[in-house]
Amino acid sequence: MTEFVWRLPTRPDGRRAEPALRRRGESGRFGPFDQVHQVVNAAELVGADGVLAPYDPAGEESWIVAGGALRATRHARVIVEFHPGFGTPVYAAKVSATLQRLSAGRLGWHLAVETDPEEARRRGDVLAGNDRYARAAEFLTVARGVWNENAVAPAGFAGTGFDFEGEYYEVGNGGFRGILSGLPFPTVYLSGASAAALELSAHHADVHVFTESAQGVHEPLARLREQATAAGRTVRAGIEVPVIARETESEAWARVERQWHELHPDGPDPHSLDLGDGRWSGFTHLGYPQPVGLIGSYEQVAQRLRSYTDLGIDTVVLSGHPHIEELYRAGEHLLFRVDPTGRTLQETTA
Image (cartoon, rainbow, N blue to C red):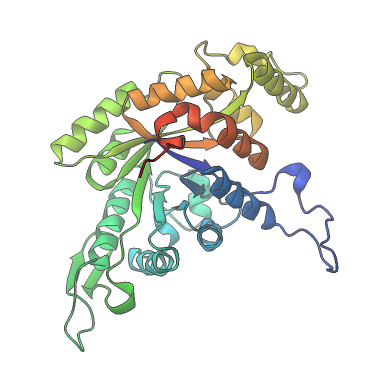
């Protein structure tokens, strides 16, 4: 069964930025977090498997968004994307243990290892290059080490005996017990196509999320599998793609053209960025973080998504603007076409 995750907004859609809406009998305004809450509710209602709270230095704090999403849902998994410089791995693990107790184990981690160098310096992070991946490897090693899902310490024992001394972190007699123990460790999502990124995932990821490119993901996916096998592990594969899908291909392109000409009235023809196989490389020009995504009819986009599953990709992170409307479209018209067995109700016999 394919896992579908929706990327949450970190900033309000422009036309929805705190509109003057009032509830009957109440004063005040539609708050800035309410739109995110509505998107989370929509994801749960349409049957999405989860949501991703993105790391955005200029947007809402992903840990706060993730906590709110876990509190507001009963079934959807919530993936928090964060930078390893967020805090110590012990602190991140403790925060996550609390969220796992709150949500019956629905939290996932997506480490944003490679970020903009200028943004990193603004956070006081001076690491660059492969050092960032070495730190991330230690971060995950320590976090898993102190988690100790099945460890039990004798009464009066301060920790569970986890010791670690590395280049970036040191822990002595660490580990959780009591209410923080016995919980499932968050599913770890990593990303990137560099050699260092794939090496990190081969040893530490549960799921590696690729970004679609004009060249496709065949080559980096093959390298990931080769390195994971060498490490004695199996790493699931995912892909993140923005989507614009409508009843017909012409309707989908009409939507693209309207958005394009609103933002780039004097720009080139958006069709010049058409890759010719249902993929379009102009999504960053419309405000998406990924350049390449899918455009077409619901059946065409579903067919392209099914081609990813044929490659062995079983996690798809989708996004669309405006979020709520596009999420409902995906839930009503797209997801069951991609995964008819897993998304269609089956009659049961007694």
